Length: 150
Image (tube, helix red, strand yellow):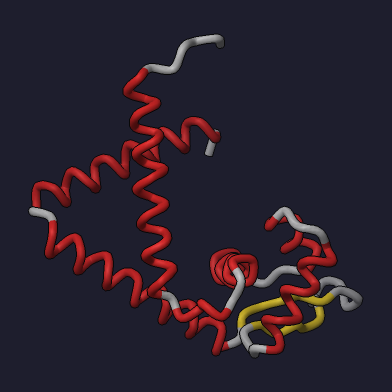
């Protein structure tokens, strides 16, 4: 598989990376979680998406050392964004989950970011352009799923 990558594929990859980076930075500016590190925000999002998990499961999922996840969880616990409780299947193990405050914080941040992006698309794109964006995102998602086998 020593095929040369086409100019259009290289250009598309560059543009996607640049635009997604710009969108990501702007959405991050809107979030209340600016007092959290990127790693702390990532763990909160993972708990919200995947549900309760042990510290070792979180460390593996986030691809970080157990010592690092311990520090992240301590900071999130101090901010009352997570809680620990015994694993119902193994009482020796602790499971981490979001607190109500943690869930509300994530939901509030998502709402603010979604509203900003929706307003931006409404104000600066035509209906046809918004439909093109949806089609392009579906194509990109399909390509990524095919490449990753998901």
